[in-house]
Length: 288
Image (cartoon, rainbow, N blue to C red):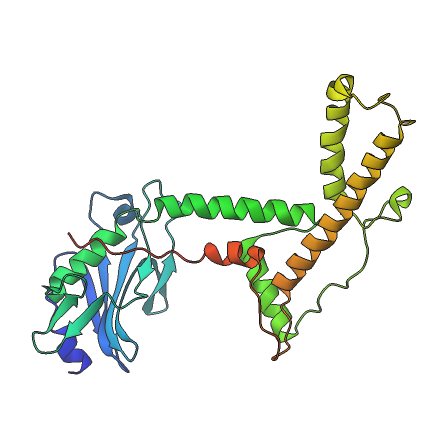
C-alpha cells in the first residue's frame, strides 16, 4: 500500500480543510477546522492530524496550529493552546496500542481487538484532542517546577525549564563553558563554612523567630550565647548547612553538566528525574 491508497481510506468531512499524503512514508496529514462554537475556530486555529505506517509501527498525532500566510503559501505553526481557558491536548503515539490491519484495512485496538475505520479513528483522535486529558498532569508538572525552582534558589541558582534545556544543549556542544567550581557567596565571618546565601538566609529566618518565641521553653541552662550547648547547636546548624549546600550544588552541576566519561555509568539524580517528569505527558486514548 502506498500513501495515496492509504489516504483514500479516509473520506473528507465538512470541517476538513485539506488532506496531504506523505512522500517518503505511508501516511497522510489532515488539516481540520475546529467546531464553529469554539473560541479556537473564531481565532482561526486549525487541527493538524497525522496518521501513518512507519518502520516503528502505527503512528498518529494531533496538534493545534496557527496558520500563517507567507508569500503564496500557508505555514501551520504548532501551538499549545495554553492561553485558552478550556484546554486542548496535543499528543502523539508512543506505544503499540493500535496497529493497522492490511487485510481488513482497519485500525485495530490491540487490548480489546476492536477495529475502526479510518474515519472513525480520526474522530477518536479529534475527541481526545478536544478534551483536557492532561489536567492533573499539569498540576503535578507545576508542583515539580516549583520544587525545582526552590532547590535551585537554595543553591543561589535559577531554574527555568526552557532555559535549562538550552544550557544543557550548549554545554554538551561546548558552545559555553561550565561555571567554575568556586566557593562563592561566603560571608567573611563564616569563612570556615561553605554555605549558599539563600540556605543561610532560610535558616536564620527560621532560627531567629523560633529563638524569640520558644526561648522561654529552653530547659538546658540559660538561653544566651554564654550557654555552651547553644553555641554548639549554632555551629552544628552551620555545619549542616554547609553539607547541604555542597550536596545540593553537586547534584545541580551533575544535572546540568553530566560527566562525558564513556566508562562511567550515568546515574539520574532526583533533580533530573523531576525535570524529565515534566516532559512525560502520556495517557491512553479514550475510544468510547
